[in-house]
Length: 612
Image 1 (cartoon, helix red, strand yellow):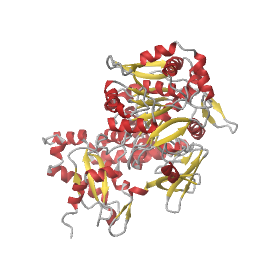
Image 2 (cartoon, rainbow, N blue to C red):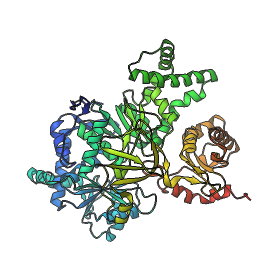
Image 3 (cartoon, one colour):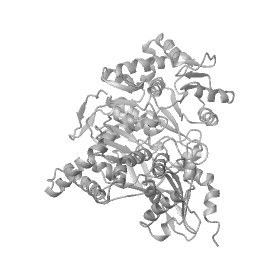
């Protein structure tokens, strides 16, 4: 993979900043990037097992043709255009094309049902939908009769000789015949307050709500992030996050604004292998992915004899300490250096190689992660740091940086973003990155923003140095029958660190004590069973007494960290994992607690069945 060249600038205060197009809106960002970075690689895609690169100039040409094709279709400024596709370079091209003509991109997750597509396209009043392929086209065909505003359907990949859709290739051909000046006139006329995107929330309660994000919101949050981290390099980024989600979308925009190289995940089941091929310098992801990599990284430790496990433990402990001292340019005592050098022999390089060997920064967000995982990777030279934000904040509120981080926190607020804690512990946020409200939902908008402050629904605290710690969700707090308030994420995270476990969900609101639902990690528990000559399918293993004893012992160890009233007294092993298809996980693999509670209410009830 080719590395992107670095371009740096310096603020008046002397702080280094990433390169930037300096665009006024998102609409003129891509034309500026195509000119400014020209022959630098912008995109890497994998086809037939080989990575291919596309330059910024070439991306600019592709986007220009798609944009002018949309103009040829009659798409006007302010009209909504949906994208129904998986993360890909084509998704990015469509996004910038829609923005450049002043239309509004509306995201639909690729795994959405036809009915969910109908809700998003119908609620937004979409004039067009860009589908990935024939399977996505079929979803739109199934509901098109109930979408009176929908005029055009475009298909990225050839589907069939459909008369009710046009291919992206035909759209580009139509666009190539129109004048470049026509497109320039469109993006130059766009105002910062104009809507850039409707991002529909994952809908953990009720139908998804369309967050209206303006060009100014997103341009400002990109600038705020540039000022926050002060990193001078143009990154090589591996992107597997859904671009329909704000985390993936912001990653895309920042990469193009700063002249980075964006490598798109070709196969979500091969993330580890592709990390080794792409060798990214920056990796944005979600806890579930890092938890899986952590399981792979720690397998040799778990299988090592006791005396060697102690060496590994010491290597992690000292690794964190020494790297912090190196960051502060402090001399390293000889005894610590010796342990650190042993870690370089035993552990650190192998873990770095899992990420491709060049990673200098990774960020995790969208859900909680155990501090032990952060410390392990940091000790090994993989700075995995937390960030915090939500769709309504145009992605970002705060994040830890290489120079300013504190484990167990999500960092300091980015410049221009204010955070305060309400009397009930709720995190409130104010700044230029706050969204303009929910589309066609004034009541929800008024409830979300009060006196200029966004009420996030998250509980948190600010320490004396301004680092933000998220302690839970207001709606996730469990209040037992005895009146004890419990934050379920703590025990859940402890259990998810266990290599045999995929998901853990605590339950116990208005119950005498908490219990926990656990799902098994298919690969890890299968390997464990194979070594013992047991059946390897999860459904059978979930009922096997040896597996129940294994999980019971892990729960006992996790429970020992908490007061008795906070301990899960019983558990149930599910015979399958949680899935997005059943609505139990969001596209960023965040668990939807209310859906899980409802789907498995009978199992939870059974755990209390014999109570007096």
